[in-house]
Image (cartoon, rainbow, N blue to C red; front, side):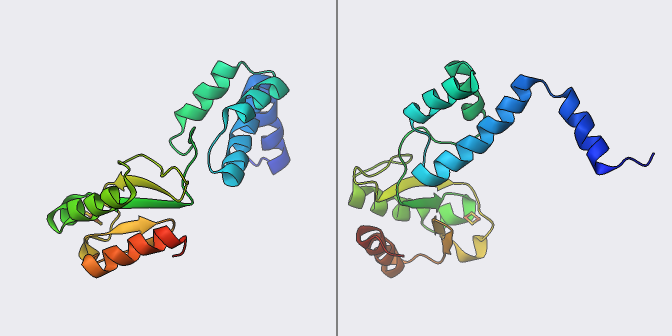
Length: 160
Ligand code: FES
């Protein structure tokens, strides 16, 4: 069979229902909103629900299906401390404990000034650098006391 691209797309377009097409738009809209706001504010979800004529409960169920979307404000820095086996053995608890104590937040929480959200993560594949954390897109490895204090100071100063 030798189909042309537009024939395939045309066919896909034909078999998708209006609801399925709207859901595609929804996911794209979620990504854009989260890129700008760092989470999905309720007022934006209500607006999407009205604009696309999709029940708000469906908007929420679509968003909650994907782990990538958040419903509360997130910090400018997302710190993820690896608690995988190698990192655990090499002191992940101390790293996590120090950050929790300094910023008075628990895992999954965000500081009131939105400076940081603290999370834990399973092995991120850098076991040789344990203990490891990520700060936004950067990987910080071999976290000793000195490096840990640098991480804390960077978060406080909004740098790093
Ligand atoms: S256990 Fe932390 S990077 Fe593998």
